[in-house]
Each structure stands twice: as C-alpha cells, then as structure tokens.
Amino acid sequence: MNKGFDISTLKKETTVRAASDKSEGRAFDFLNKDISLGGDSFSDKKRESFYHELAILLNAGVDIKTSFELILSEQKSPKDKALLERIMNSIINGSTFSNALANEKQFSMYEHVSIQIGEETGKLVIVLEQLATYYKDQITQKRQIVSSLTYPGIVLCTSFGAIFFMLNFVVPMFSDIFKRFGGKLPAITQFIINAADFMHRYGLILLGLVAFLIWLIYQQRQKLWFRIFASKLLLRVPFVGDLIRKIYLIRFCTSMTLLIGSKVPILRAIQLVKKMINYYPLEESLDQIEKDVLIGIPLHESLAKFDFYPKKMIYLIKVGEEVNQLDHFFDKTSQQYNEEVKHLTSIMGSMVEPFMIIFLGLIVGFILIAMYLPLFQLSSSF
Image (cartoon, one colour):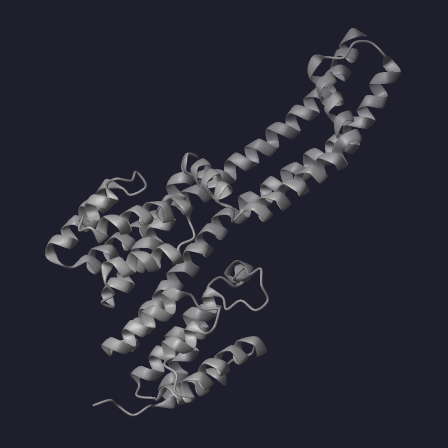
C-alpha cells in the first residue's frame, strides 16, 4: 500500500538537493552551467532534475497530472514551462507519457522508448530514476573535463597573448635600436625580428585564416568524412585518445544497462544506442554488431571484432551473457570506466598545468635572450 504524499518531505528533499548543488564549488559556478547552442534546448541538467523529481512524486503516490503541476510550479524558464505544459496536456487528453515525449523534438528516442518500456512493465519509477542517474553521470563527466582543461586553457591563451604582445610591441622597439647600430645580428635575434615582421604584415590574414578554419570545422562537423577523420585522429593522440574512448564506452555501457534492465530486447537496445551516441567508431561497430546479433552471434564475439572495445570489457560481457545478467555487468563496466575517467582527468589537469607554464616561460625567455644578446655582445666589445 502506497503512503500518502507528504509535501513537507518533498520540500525538505528538494531543499537539501538544492543546497548540495549550490555548495558544489561556488567559486567555479560557471563550470556547472550547461553549454547549449540553442536557446530552446532542454539541457542535461534540466532533464536530470525533471526525471528525479517526477520519480520522487510518482513513488510517493501522486498521480502524474498533479506531479506535472508541482514540477511546473517550480519552472522559471517560459520555454521549459511551455514544453512541460504541452506534455502534461497530451497526457490529460489521453496520450501515454512516452508518446507525449515522442512528440517533442527535445527528447530523444532513447528516452521515450525507455519510458514506454517502464509503462509497459510497471517500472516507470525505476526507469525515471535510471534516466536521472544517467544524465547526472553525463553532467559529472562534462564538469570533470571542463574543470581539468579550464586552467591550462587560460594559461595557453595567456601564452599566445604574451607572445603576440612581445612580437608586435617589444621586438620592434629592439629592432629599431639594432638598425641604428648596424652590424650583423645573431641568428636567433634575426629569426625573432623576421617573425615579428611577418606577424606585423600578415597577422590579420593569419587571424582570418584561423577564424575561417574554425567556421569550416563547425560547418563540416556532422559530415561523414569529417567525423571519420576527426575520430581516427583523436583516438591516436596519446592519453587523449584513451580518455575519449573511455568516455564513449561509459555512455555505451550506461545506455545498455538502462535498456536491458528495462527488459528491452538486446537487438532493439543496440539500435537505440546507435541512434543516441553520435560517435562514428561506435556507430560503425554497432551497425555490424546489430547484423551479427540478428543472425545469432553472441554479443561478446561481435564486440571482439573491433579494437575499440577493450578485451577486459568483452570478457565481462561474455560472463554476463552466460549468467543472464548482462545489465549487471554493463553497469559494473560503466562504473569502472567512470572511475578511470576521473583518474585520467585529474592526471591530465595536473600534468598540463606545469607544461603550459614551462611553455610560456621558455617562449618568453627565448624572445628576451634573442633581444638582449646583441646588447651583451655590444657591451663586451667596448
């Protein structure tokens, strides 16, 4: 028998949750914001909050209409409120929750099929909790990566800014002095002067070419040839390639855990994951894996055909198939790679920071030595 809904309990839990989110690094609040290229995007953070709160309300015995009304009362964005109102009205008019989500482009097929399975099996609350956990993990991964790269990125931008300033303002001052004295300059000094002159003449053109290259990459990012090239290139980069591969393996394993745990057939789960994870190496492999599973080849044997999947993961999936607990082993694999990604991102942040500082020091030091070397030679000649 379900207990009656206690609004004070919900308020208490919501307050604790909000306090926890607020205390998570106030000095770095900008790292916790979701990056969205569209103003009407229903971000991962909003999805996690929506599924979490809805699961709490439904589990407390509140009907779905009242649950939506309570969630709507907390919405501050007019677009988010309009989105949830459309879903609620569809449900009131007789549509299922999953079909209401399917009619909104902000929600993926992965989400509405998962919820459909939850409705059919009577495990809607469990599916909602799993979806909330999934998006929470997505947010955590993004924050880890952004926080690890923020400081090195600032140092790198500062380095290029310092180099640009010295080549355009400091070096020309020394160059004028050297022209007055005449004589042959040291090779490194002449190199720096030539570099400064090149930057002065063609700096704007180079800046335009960089801007054009960024625009071209943005325009071509969804083209097949670019996705193949970019994925192969990044996977070959030491350390970075391993980190990227594990991030997408986490998404793959987490998605499979949710779908298989919701009693979605494995073939259908593979099809949904393929549409959800927009990463070429995974999509390419899942195309073939789908065909293999369709003709009866075990999942672990099909995964073993691709270097993208580690041998240890394949072995765990093999065990999961043998004991009929595939969702459990996908979950364990996801947790393991999640810990490894945390470790790798912390190492990356610790290693990149000193290298960036050393890089800046070497470049600035090289320019200063090149500029002062002729002055040292001139003073020693007297």
